Length: 137
Image (cartoon, rainbow, N blue to C red; front, side, top):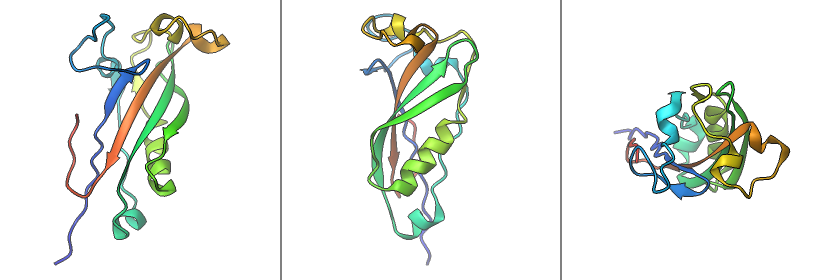
């Protein structure tokens, strides 16, 4: 019998590298997922399923506060497989947030002095690919 695989798109979201468990973190910043209006999960590519590729990766999204659109994605830790990394980046590029709902990176962390820090927000995403099923952590 052919075993079917599903992706675990376990998304652990953090702002400025802080984990968030409830609606608000310890410093009172609202969970960025509350501002998310469209969050498609990555597709588990057929070639990766056939080879039983699994892995865990971390990605840093930069979101334009004014529009809620993703402006950039950086991989901070690979899943170990380029095909899985590409699937995550493709999905994250499609994410959308409520305009004006996220704090700028400069507000999240005063150490952000980049020119974009006053206009963009940062969200760290952790994605897991397994063959066990899909859950959201």
